[in-house]
Length: 196
Image (cartoon, rainbow, N blue to C red):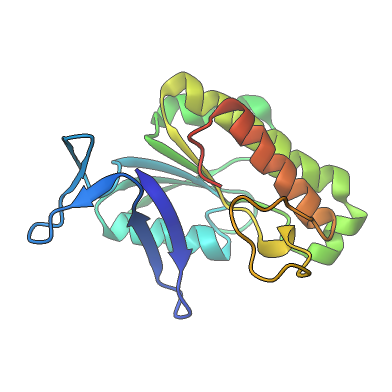
């Protein structure tokens, strides 16, 4: 089970296997429910592949021997070993076509309007990219049997309660957070196993 994805202070991506997975200390092999799992699923589709998180994730996955399809819009990705696809995520048919063609094991939705202030003025566009596209990807993941990961935000906490826990109710503090929360809900309404 893919349970945690993070980038450290040096820009290194770390993917953790936890929650019901036992790792063989000598070989590093992971077991879940009595069956051997590979460290990483084979085919990954990553939106926002030219952004900070997406770029590092694509590089990590490619260096780990995975097949990576990196979706980008305006900026080139410039990562060796990945298939770079220029696609407008607002074009539902183009996105569906890429997903059908690459048949991913895991889809990571890392694309977003990351300028928090700009999201206040373009909330409808942010909602479309963060939630509508996420929902479409979750539907596609359900159909093709892929896992789904949404890169969300820490802006879901208003900071009044200290460190937020999984069971805490979100308290989005701005349009960026509201639209990211809508993306979480869009995915989890379709895939209870989605990772947000």
